[in-house]
Structures are given as C-alpha cells and as structure tokens.
Image 1 (cartoon, rainbow, N blue to C red):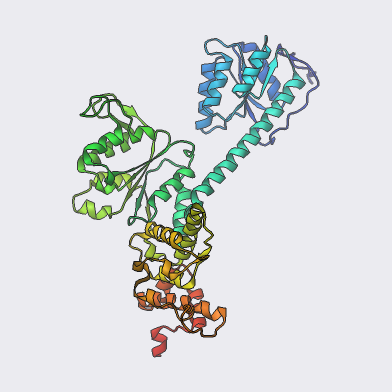
Image 2 (cartoon, helix red, strand yellow):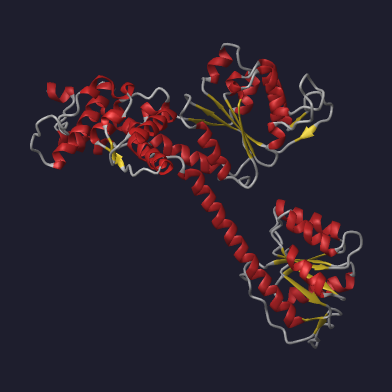
Length: 500
C-alpha cells in the first residue's frame, strides 16, 4: 500500500519559502555545518532543514561542546566543518565569546550568528570579530540559504588565499638557496618532504655551507611559518650560560639574574628552534637536551616548575657526530634521537658549477645595498673564483663578492678587484684570451675567447678526478653525455684516449 507523502513540519526558526538546493560546494562531498543552539528543538529543526538542502549537519547545545566538536573535526579523520551557525544567547560561554574562540583557534569553519533580539551594535561587533553574517530570528529560509552560500564562498576564497600564501612562503624560503648542483636539488626535495612535519632534522657540513639558510627554508615551508624562528649557536655561548640561554632562569637563580628570563625553547613554542654547532655542547648539556627532545618538558634554571613546549627542533654540526660518538665526546643516545632526518651539505669546492650563479646572486644583493651599478664579472674573475677552493665555503664567497663590489670602479668585477688569496699566483697574468690593457690583442672571435675559461675549468676538474669522466660530470653538475660533447668541442681528450 502506498503511503501518501506529507510535507515536513515547519521549523520554529524559519519562515517557509520554496526550497532551493544549495550548491555552494560539490555534491560529492557535502559541506558540514555545525549548529550551536541551547534549544534542542530549534537545533534539530535547523538540522533537518539543512539536510534536505544537501548539507551534512551536526548539533551542539553549548559553546564548550561546540569547541570540542570543532577541534576533533580539525584533528581527526573526519572532514572539518565548513560553517557554524551560532546562537548569540548560549548558557555559560555566550555565542560572541564562542565566535572569538573559533577565530582565535583558526578553525576552518566560517560563522553565521543567529539571535532573537539583535541590535546594530552587536551585529557590528560580530562582523568585526569575524562573523560572515548576522541574522535575526525567525529567519526566512531563502535568506538563510543566501547567507550560507555567501559564507561558503567566503570560506573558499580564504582557503585559496591561505594555499597561495603557503606556496609563496615556501618559494620564498627556497628562493634564497641558490644552486642547481644535483646534491642541492636533493636537499630541496628533502626540505619539501620534512617541512610539514615536526620531525627533528640534523644537518651536517663544514662551517659556512648554509646550514642556517636551510633551517630557515624548512621553517618557511612548514605550517609553523607564522610563528617564531629562534636560532642559537651553542659554540658561541659559554658553558655556564648555555643552560640559561636554552631553558631560561628565574630571578635570583645565580649572580646577575636580576629578573626572570625565558629561554630559547620557550621563545620557539609553536615555531622552530635551530641549534647550530650542537657538537660543542658538554655531556651534561647533552643529557638535558635529550630529555627535552624526548619529553618536550624542562625546568628553567633555579625553578622547580616544569614547562611544556611545542617547538620543532633543527640541529646542526660542523663536525662528524659519528666520530664524536666513537670518541666518547657525544652521547650515543642523543645522536640516535636527533638523527631522524639527516641533511648533509656539500662544501662549495664540491659544487664548482654553482659558483658563478652564487657569485651573481651575491653581487646583485651587495650592489643594491651599495647603490652601485655593477652588473657582472669579467671572464678572468669568474675563472679565478671557480679555481679557488673556498675553505670558508658559501660564507667566504659572499664576503669575497662584497669586497669586490665595494672596490669595483667599473661595470663588471675584474681580476684586480678580487683578494690575492683568491687570484693566487695566476692573478699577475690575466688569461690570454682576454688580453690585459697593456698587452697586444690577439684577434679572435668572442665565441673563441669565451671557450678558454671553460677549457681551463674542465681540464682542472678532470685532472683533480684522475680523468674519471663520470666523477667529473657529477662534480660539475652535468650529465656524462654533456661532458663528452664539451670535451670534444674544446679539444680536450682524456689521457687514456690520447694514449690509445
């Protein structure tokens, strides 16, 4: 027997109007809407209305319950709520205070305020806090639909802006790292992979290889980018003060402690803490670091109060920690705790192909700071820079370029603008292809002249690698086929082929 269909009972909140299905988000994934009203009849009536319009509703009878529900939806397996309908008059925490908490905690849901006795002042205040709309009960259903669609569009724009901002921040973090060497490309991939997590990162490499820059890039590409990035070089702080710097102290903890002071861990709460030269920490300090990394807890110097922190920790060492562990100078348990994701930074002498790009990068930076129109390097200068071993790595290159930019009186940096330790004995004799001002010019095309620096670079690299072409190609950041073509074009023939 067919049962006659009947219309659902009218909502005590809404004035009826013909139903129009909301299509603000794809039907395949219904937008979730949270209804917060202490009147269960009103809340259920609204939920029925929204369900018929194609939404996925849920109800809460108090602000406290709503906060718990929203938090679970953000952290759990379920989808976050797209929208929250908040009654202004709630027991305990009112609707306006609930709105403030939702905005403060940056939940995904946008909010529409509902009230039976609204005023212009309260409406203005709600919109100022961050509400999408402010409606007076009883609400006409078409008016509510329009308000919901407007709120969902607003949410979509906010999410798009956040995504674009995150992408820009990520690019901004990586754009300061210059280099196309294959080892650097792997490091870029590691940064992208580890940035979203809270995983501890250990960086190793010689001083001046850019460990601080990598730490900044990881922070900028992470969800913590809006919070503090705190940096401390453990090797620059006396042992007696390092504990206070890391964990803070209370007034009177030691001579000179005239006031309470928060430490670097607490300052980095919610953000990122970068500890450089961790290899210089004493055994006692290593034990304290192990505890805070495991438990995320510590006590300031002179205090018995335990403080909990949520700081992402990145550590760096300019000495091989494996050897220090073997020598008994670094705790094995701390080493295993921090060696979760390891990033090894190559010295600059092993990424010769990146030197011209790095030099140009530093030149643009320093020329802009100095207000000078210096636009590049002469072929002799760039060849000399590539021949130099740079024991101080990228930091030394930056200083060399800054000095050259200061001294340069031409549009391009020449050999005599570079320090003697960089030019070496070859500084007194410019490359034959360029021709010094006081030497007779040997007629040649520009293409022929530009081949000479490349020929010298390839010849030096091949000799350094005992004419191993695969190793040479990897060191120069090119594939083997490209190296063969360049060697043939430049008339360079490995010793084994010449012997044949």
